[in-house]
Amino acid sequence: MAKRIDVSGLSAFYGSHKAIDDISMTVEPCSVTAFIGPSGCGKSTFLRTLNRMHEVTPGGRVEGKVMLDDENLYASGIDPVAVRRTVGMVFQRPNPFPTMSIRDNVTAGLRLNGSYKKRELDEIVEKSLRGANLWNEVKDRLDRPGAGLSGGQQQRLCIARAIAVEPEVLLMDEPCSALDPISTLAVEDLIGELKQRFTIVIVTHNMQQAARVSDRTAFFNLSGIGEPGRLVEIDDTERIFSNPSVQATEDYISGRFG
Image (cartoon, rainbow, N blue to C red; front, side, top):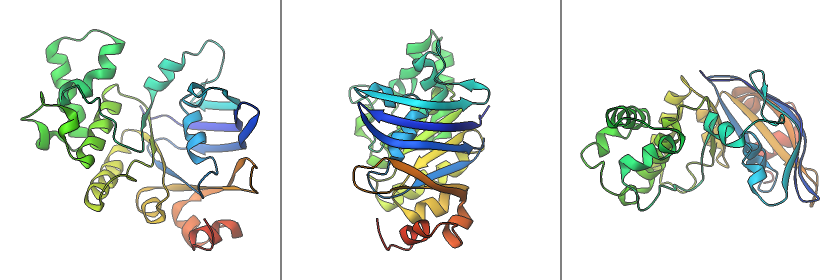
């Protein structure tokens, strides 16, 4: 079941450097929320705080709360690995495991988490690849290396791998930036289908993509060089792109800076 995210007073640090400052927002279940803003404003850092990937970076730490429904992901005793199963992630560049088959790429996370019969795994592989709109393209070559697929297919394979463990939230960090226009359209169509089952948060530099795929858009910005990134505003995507509340948002969207 897709879950709601409530973030309150969240700041993230790399050592003594504050990367993002005092961010609060709500992400509704079964929706797509896009993060936009200039390079270096903390979009990806904030995204990584939502599944505790930020703390994997040396010196990475956070202050504040990330609530997934009623559970604080940063409470003491919470297992970060379990958090990352619940809040899956798809990265900027397709990263299938190069020595693994397509089938084994999909089931990699499952095999870490428990034992399954072959028939169960086969069912999950088909379901996940269908969910990623990839099954018809690869069903006859499941035992061939995932690295042999095209870039767009590899990214959809990574999405299949992420959804195979049945997360409730799916984070996407510029998932189309390395893809050609046709592959980008395939992933965007897929995002529209996946939001029926998952809460989706996507970081994108592409204004048109944010406008096409998201229900709500959050604009991040920096107040100056060396300053932490801040959330400027979040609203329905149509409003952000047609009538933003803050001048800086309009300036960014219209191409005056960034």
